[in-house]
Structures are given as C-alpha cells and as structure tokens.
Image 1: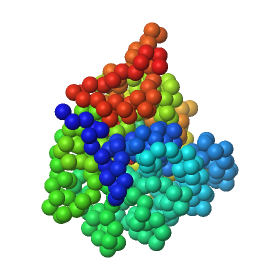
Image 2: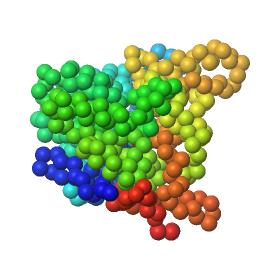
Image 3: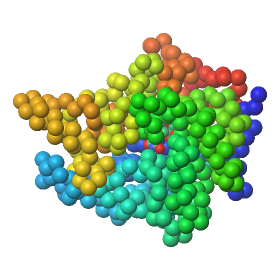
Image 4: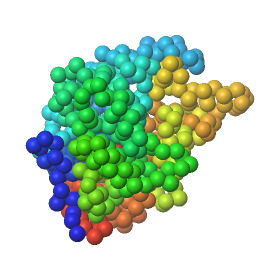
Length: 417
Ligand SMILES: Cc1cc2nc3c(=O)[nH]c(=O)nc-3n(C[C@H](O)[C@H](O)[C@H](O)COP(=O)(O)O)c2cc1C
C-alpha cells in the first residue's frame, strides 16, 4: 500500500509534500502552525479573519480600541451602516501579519493565507481588494479564497505585479461551483493554481445544507471534479479536504488522482494550534453525539461545532463597533435576531438568542468550538494521562503521521513527550 510520502504536489518545478494544513480563523491556524507545515515541506495556512483584532493580539497595535472609540455613539443603534473599515488599516495589519510569517519561514514548503470572502466588512469589494493586495505585497506564497463564490475576486488584483506568480486557489464544494468560477473568470486568462474540493465532513463553515450535508460525500465530488478537469483538458491540481483523518485516507485520495490533501481537525489539538488548552481538551473528550451542524453563524453558511460551545444560545449585545466583520449594508443577521428577542423578552435582564450568534465576538474569544466531523476520533490519536486529560501533540508529530503511516494506523506520541 502506498503512503503519502510516495507522492509530491508539483507547482511548476517546485515539489512539496502533498499535505496542506487548512486555514482556521480566527487565529486557530496560527503562524507557528503554518510555519511547521512549511518547514516540513508541505503547505501551512494562516487566516486573515478579523485581521485588525489579530494584529492587536500579536503585534500590540490598537486598531480595535480605536475603532470602538470612533463608533462609540452608535452602540445602541441597530443600523450599523455608518461603521466603515479603513482599507488602509486593513492593508497595514495584513502586511504586518504576512511579513512576520514570511520572514520566519524556513524549509522548502509554502505558507498561504486563507481569505474568507464572507467577511464583508460593510464594503465587500474594497476590503477584499485591500486584504488580497496587502498579502501579495508582503510576499505570501499563495492565497486560498474561501466561503464565497469568488466570482469577481481574481479581477480585484489583476493589476498586481504578483497576480501571475503567487499561487491563487479557491475552495469549492461541487463541480458546479468550479464551473461557474471558471466561466466568470475566463476573460482574465488566469486559471486558479489549485482547487480545494471540500466535502461535508470538514470543520468551519460548510458549502452544504445543514439538513442534507450527510447525503454528499467527498470521494464522489472529487471524482466529478477530476472527470471535469480531464474532459476540459485542465491541469489544475485538485486538493481534497474534509474528513481525511489518517495517512491511509490521504494516500487513497492521492491514488485516485488528487494532487494533495488539505487537513485541519487533527491539528486542532497540536501545541502550535491557537485554541486554548481547555478547548483542546473539549475536542479530545467529544463523542460523536456532541457534534452538530447548525445554522447559528450569521454568514448564512451552516457550521459544524461542539454542541456545548459557549457561543450557542447567548444573547450579548451586538459588538459591531469594535468588530463588525460580517456587516453588509449595515446589517448582520445576528443583529436582527437580537433585536427581535429584545422585543419578545422586554422584561428580561438577559436575553437569549437561539437562532444566531455574535460570531465576531465569540470566534475572537475562542468560544465557537467549530470542528470537523471526526473530532470525536481525536482521543485515539494520543495518550490519556493519569489525571484524565489527553496529551497534546506537536504539529510535527501529526504531520509525519499523515506523511508516513499506512494501514489506517495512527502513531501515538511518546508518553509525556
Ligand atoms: C477549527 C476549524 C476552523 C476552520 N476555519 C476555517 C476558516 O476560517 N476558513 C476556511 O476556509 N476553512 C476553515 N476550516 C476548514 C479547514 O481549513 C479544512 O479545509 C477542513 O477542516 C479539512 O477537513 P478536516 O478538518 O476534516 O481535516 C476550519 C476547520 C476547523 C477544524
């Protein structure tokens, strides 16, 4: 049986270990995690989600405080259309983040940034242009566009000197989404350098319905995409993602013709992952019944998470003055739900909102415990310690396990190591 290390992802004359650690916002896939993937010869991904706030945390800037101060008088107003993100500040913060990671990069691998288009920031085009341009300016190896239709995104940066040299890719969950993208971008004569095909078992937001995700499966969608590529004579590397839990799972996708796999859930319990230690233990402890796909994200995309995430059923006041990353024309569906509940529960000191959550606030505080379907198997990837907790792992250990393991096996870490 073949193993992942028998394959290579080829980008021009560069050959990489065909393992991509997927982007996990907000700062769950840290620079440290991405740098490990690159050092080991694969691809790591940072995320630019809530970039101003992440910059404050990592680099001591105070963008969020200043923004909160600027819009303080708007707090009790449910119309948030006056909240403007300054594209120059977004660009500054992005450049700082990307420059730091690229300067620290060692080894033969690459670092990409994950750019969620649904972070519309009250001005989708302008803010997306600022994010993409700044990442390219600061030397990012590649950009993965996610959570969106990506239709006009390449066009936003077609004048950038690195437009044809940086690796630009998209995430799709169906062959149809890929076809639409290619049709809309035909005029640019610039194909994506890679296409991530993400199936229904992934973590984060999903490209499937909350009710029908289980009717789809990654292998079938990948096969449809590969057939389409063949029929159209397209040589774009396809990267399979979602529920690839062992090295053997990965090798079987590579044998079927994908160029690499994108994985994330196994790395959520790595030392280098940004989740707090107590949340990593929640992930280890989870059973299959503790995980659900729900619709509480105001993005409109279903999201997989642990049912006991602190973000569920909370009713905090919308926090758009400091954050507001999901605002579109001054609106976010959490604001609408919160306003409705205020009217329904006028005498309550604390309101509860069940159908939506304030994603910005809770993602920032690591209280949305989004996770992949196979999170309940994480406990089988490590040792249970005498105090009942699970031993966190190094990213290198997990990466090497994907790279070299066979026969569905998972290598446990040395006890206490
Ligand atoms: C905790 C977590 C957060 C994620 N956040 C994002 C994100 O911000 N953007 C994105 O495109 N994908 C996100 N994903 C999806 C991953 O990048 C990846 O494609 C997918 O989870 C791979 O499947 P696996 O987790 O089963 O290995 C997230 C996944 C997890 C587990």
